[in-house]
Amino acid sequence: MKIQNIEIIIKIGDITDENVDVIVNAANNSLLGGGGVDGAIHKRAGASVLEQCKKHGGCATGDAKITTAGNLLCKYIIHTVGPIYGRHGGLESLLLYNCYINSLKLADEYSLKTISFSAISTGVYGYPVEETLPIIYKAIKDFSAKNNNIQEIRFVLFDKEKYKLYNSYFNAILDKNL
Image (cartoon, rainbow, N blue to C red; front, side, top):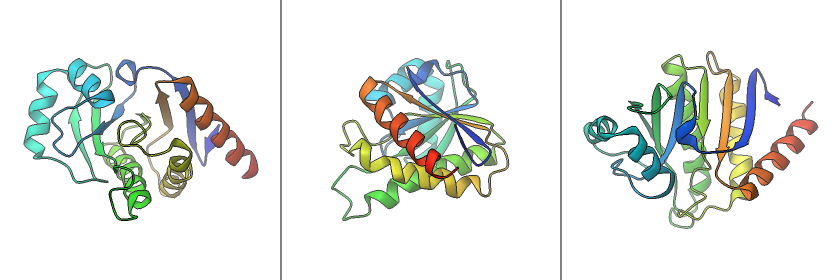
């Protein structure tokens, strides 16, 4: 399936195994590693990525920072901090949109062509997957209108339930917009 000229791929897998130009880490504000996807990425990527993250001095919610990928197959890691659901005074949707749009813009600045996302903020940060999907779609659609480099966006999901929700949503929305 495609949004504008960007191929969209939805799959079940481990984002640390992705052989793309860049993966997006669902990080915390410190960028120093944590649980879930963030912990798995830091563990597999190694100490060099942690050192680069320390130099960034943290990351605001909705913002994105880039590092090399250390021991991973990809070339770079973009670290973005998603909102904790219900803790941002109603700004959660804007902050989540910013995670996706800022990650895409940063990848584009580095002339990267393939990018893999996990389901940002839907784990311990508690954002309902169903509420994230229209936000993600809007960010991709807005970005694709000005995109120069990104050719493929992958959503690499850890479980079947999220996979089904993403797949159903994107198939339905893209069928309507043909």
